[in-house]
Image (cartoon, rainbow, N blue to C red):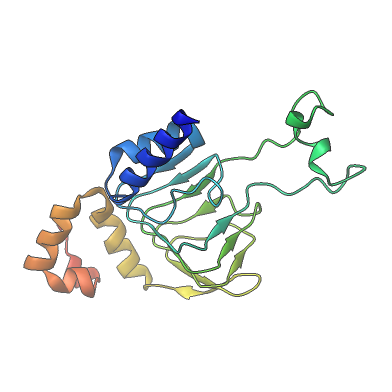
Length: 200
């Protein structure tokens, strides 16, 4: 009881700085198999973000996003957990072994979006709209909306995407982003092949 209380207090303290807390990230990786890159937020919840989820840097998640890691087996006698989770004592070993979900850098997932087990990769820079139900992998820089989610368009044209990828801005820290805004605001707020240039 005391250990659980201490754990809750630690988590609450670390979550005050969920953007940068290395202790929170280490805890989530060790205890929940949830790997989260720096500056990503809204995802430190083991009930909404299951084990075997890997999240890149600078990602934004609404507090109502839900990730489903596996479906109930439909070809068994019953879809009840007794036949796929060993903890209930009916079967000797778990029968569901979900693959890792890879969410790349700079992904934004809106309110009430659901990521289903059919999706195992969300590309860098993608946006998933509020209420979307994602059933397949998401390409980089795609904007996905709807039920089921469909690729509506890309955030940028191909040349701008190439320039953003070449910049590798997501590898920098908050200070480097602040410096970019101060010295080259056009690159931060209107990225393109001419505004980004060869060096950030």
